[in-house]
Image 1: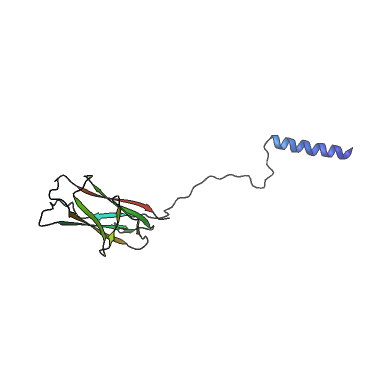
Image 2: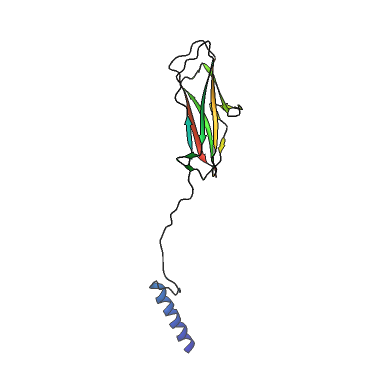
Length: 158
């Protein structure tokens, strides 16, 4: 009988504790907070020469346009590596010239639908990749409104 009273008292206490959201934990504190800081600096710049306005004549069948992709700007160097593609955009679907993309070592970079293979720019140390586009006339007359553009599509290397 005495044992039943003790068990009933213990069950009653536990029932009251569970109903009142009382905790038997040693530490009952909740902390909300945040931390902030610079994880990495991403620097990706493209430098080009001024716009070229040049007509392709019979005497001059090639025009070259240089540009470079670097990871340093305003004395800040990137802390991260990048992947990127180079896209050559033309204003005329039936472009009357051949367009070729070369790196600084005169290696031809193949273009598929006007987009290069994936290129890489290393972070941490100053890096620079130099390219040039060679435009060669393929037809006698080229419309003066025909233009070529360069688009760099970049993403952080993970």
